Image (cartoon, rainbow, N blue to C red; front, side, top):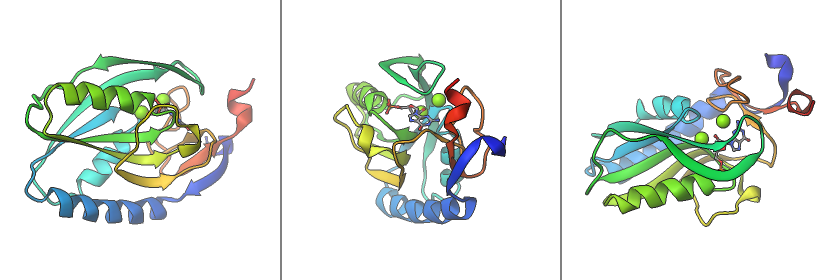
Length: 179
Ligand code: 5GP
Ligand code: MG
Ligand code: MG
């Protein structure tokens, strides 16, 4: 599996350190807010579970599943809701937890959807950000790391369902998806 990785962008130690910093920022901001974390499956699963154990305030966790990528490395631009929330978010502060913002279509769709349900506030917390690729008008309020315009795997991010369990953030070798 590690043979398919071109290079490591962020090691497990670097990720741990950055999550500590992000958790401190969130803990200061949400101390008395009782927000709900909305984790976007499946990519944000690892990020969500790792950071939530560092958050020192009252919160709920829920998740949604959306599909925007067909099986491959190219975005189709189309987004649909595959699995909805179980919580009512009316009047609640919402923090959307995402693995990566690429074109931004997924988060634009989700943020609009949740705003229409009467969330008190919506912030976006994305583990990674690929700013070069943005098409939709949406930005994250909190970003772990900016990454170059390459196909990233590990720490929850997959290629065709694989590599999510890598404990670091890496670039997938082109040969893996270009044949
Ligand atoms: P967007 O709608 O912003 O273009 O893309 C959102 C989703 O596409 C992300 O949540 C992620 O699941 C997937 N995606 C975008 N870029 C990458 C990447 O470099 N690697 C992986 N594994 N998934 C990506
Ligand atoms: Mg995702
Ligand atoms: Mg994916």
